[in-house]
Length: 137
Image (cartoon, rainbow, N blue to C red; front, side, top):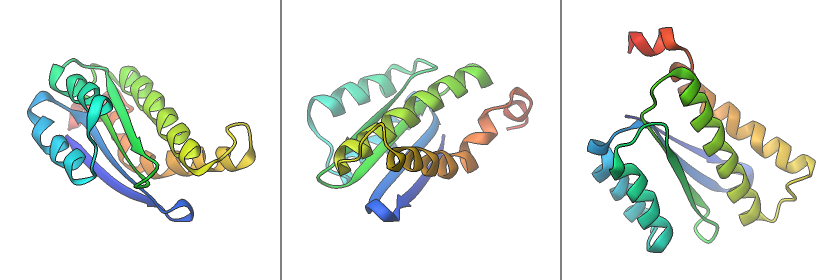
């Protein structure tokens, strides 16, 4: 598993991302969820996905009150499966942040937010987007 933490300064929003998580990583992710104060039904569903150990799945959980999000992408079976999960979770992340900050999903501010997230996540995510690069890991 590879982790990344980034901040969106203009919105004062913290994001923790876990790429290629496996069942053995569940305790580490759970500690992060604890540290950020995530509890309840959403957290239970998220942990079920992680602890299932199934590939090509993920989850995003956010708190607008605490202005933070955790994104987890389980291990993937191929580069195109990674791209699918990656795009899916990036969309959830952008929508949750926009909702928490009152940003119109059809407006320019949302488009800039989605682009900023894409730029921040690309530096890490790119290593899983090519089957040749995945084989060299």
